[in-house]
Image (cartoon, rainbow, N blue to C red; front, side):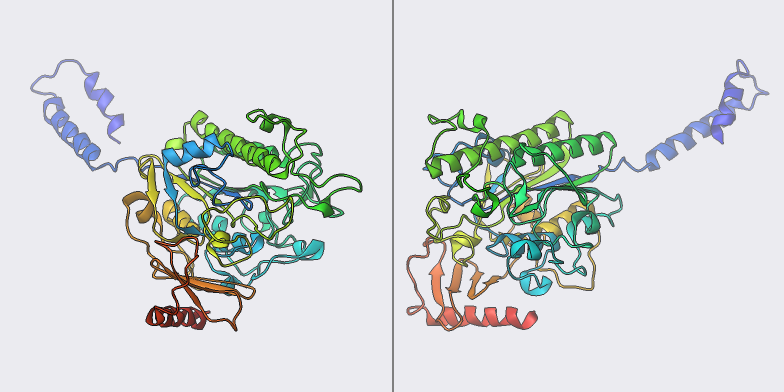
Length: 471
């Protein structure tokens, strides 16, 4: 309204005692000043969220966790320096399917119901995770500024109609349905296993790690240009071990990596040693993660993007020659067990200006916390009709606050464990007595203290029973 009158007064020439300008102009100035002073400052845009998972990467495979590791991962080393490295971060389950379901729902297996690995073509293409479960992208769609969501990589929680990513809150999907696929042929057993949305996608000869990174980069570029907050879930299938059932007759079951991944090593792509080939697989993964992080810089959104990287579970240590070559040093055992090597995983977080660079977080956190963190970052409300096992990890990551968890509980098949503070009870069968370990002094779980700390075992057993009563 004011802008329609101001030009009239200014066009009327020099003011005289008969002009209203000397009286009204100061009032207008005061009014405009008051309006400006009352204006709300421009709100910061909600941060983008990038969650990257590796598949069966070992706790001891990265030099940032194990200085003796010979595997070259310069981009993950850099990520650890730019943010924080978590040394007591746990997956909620030591196997691929269940771990992913827990991350995406913020709930442990005993609540979301997907308690075991999906088996075979029938299992992987079945319902999988119950359709009543709510996933991170569905939470973020309810934020004050709704997020666009993309998933690029390994799904592995059901691919029947209604179970597929674009039917569970993701706007875009490029990846494979099953727990593993051939890195170049993109098949799971006899079934073609690569999809865009719900349609089969044929990119034979293209390395899956590169396919998924390229899709994530395209997603980030497009939606950053459109000025929309985005959630990118990037679950790589690397470095999952090769599976003989995915190979055609006569083809050797070897670790698959592009030729360029061998360039940094003294050996070449003709190398036959399984561990050396595994090293190249991890290096190719590191390169792909670096390309995704680079696009954040190129798009000038790195400062406003929360990045979290983790392995879905520890490396498998089942004694299979040529396959179980990843390292969980100094932790005990590996995937599909409730020993530390199966549950405690590499994890890093970066959020410039919020997470101090070059820091280490040794407080216990776990994968269900990522749903809560995502909701907090987006300002999205959580449903009140279910129990979430995640807690807000952001004060721990940004301020060094103590863990929000009194205890963490784990059950997989016959294995079970509970961590409370630095103490852990663990058993491999329900008919076995609990073993007790002090993880602060014995992360390798080499010294069972149960007989000398019976009161401690009793207290932790009661905490385990309390968890069970809550399911």
